[in-house]
Length: 134
Image (cartoon, rainbow, N blue to C red; front, side, top):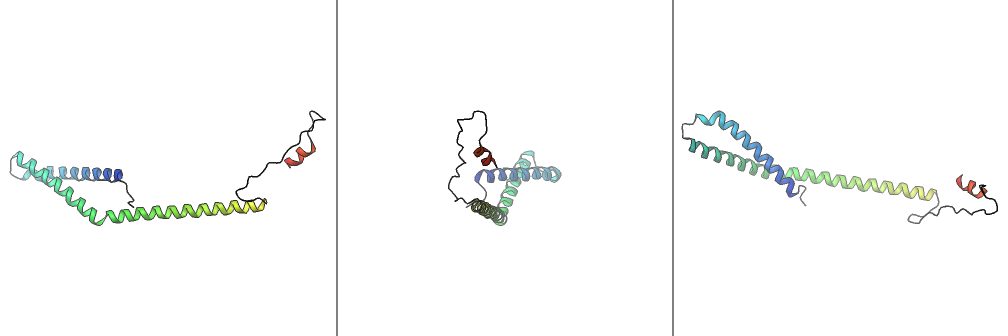
C-alpha cells in the first residue's frame, strides 16, 4: 500500500523538475555563456543538461529517498490508526462504566420517566413531576 497517492507524486515531481530547471538556468546563465559556440548549440546543450540533471536526480531520489519517505508516512498512518483505536477503546470503557453506574445495559435504550397527567387540578404541578426532576 503506497503512502503517497498518484496526484501527490505528480505534484512533487513537477515541483522537483521546476526547481532543478531553475537552478540549471541560473548556472548556465552564469557559466555556460563562456562556451564559444553558436546560440543553437547553446540551446541544445542547455536542454540536454537540464533534462539530464533532472533525470539523474530523479533516479537518485527514487533509489534512495522515496522508500524511506513512504515508510515514514506509512508508519505515521499506522501510529495514528492505533492511537485512534486506543482512544475509542478508552471511550467505550468509560461508556460501559457509566452504564454500569446507572444500572443500564449497553445498547439498550434508556426510557425517560413517564409523567402521569393529573386531570383533577388544572394549573398545578403534580408531586410525581417534581420528584422526577430531582
